[in-house]
Length: 113
Length: 111
Image (tube, rainbow over all chains, first blue to last red; front, side, top):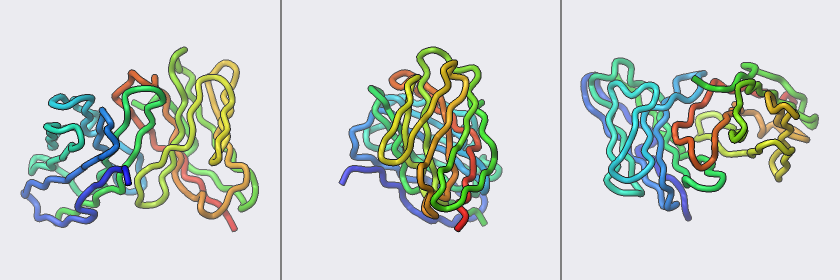
């Protein structure tokens, strides 16, 4: 079935370690997104990518990095520079045509101890 | 910043219509209104979108005012499974790539 797969679903890391969250889509979507969600809060945009080998910072990019080497993959690295990395991370994708609604993955919950 | 404002929370009795408002007073002529919902600890799900005409699908109806400065999402017969956070966003469909969400409305369906 087509969709977006995020892994891992749950992740625990020690403070100071870099962490990479995976996001893969087989929908042939052009654009991909990473959002962060804190408890009881809305979604905040970290990074987004419109095409392969190109990406832009969102509103809270500091302490994060991404790559877009393949159309179907958009991994997010949470670096040790991110001061408060514990959060729920959501990946999304969409076609850059027509209605272009977002399709989301099920999320990755990162806890830094 | 988000271009929309929504009440932080609302209650609705099970079986009644849930009417969720959204203000988008600075909306431009080619921006559409989109609605998504997020059930607890899951990824958000697309519900419906519209430009200026009212829209209906199997999930909900969208009513957009004539001046397009506000809209209402209607869930005609709310069930407990409709308990979720509902987000309203505005954007140009095949152009705006930076998609910003606000804080949404937390809808509680009461048994």
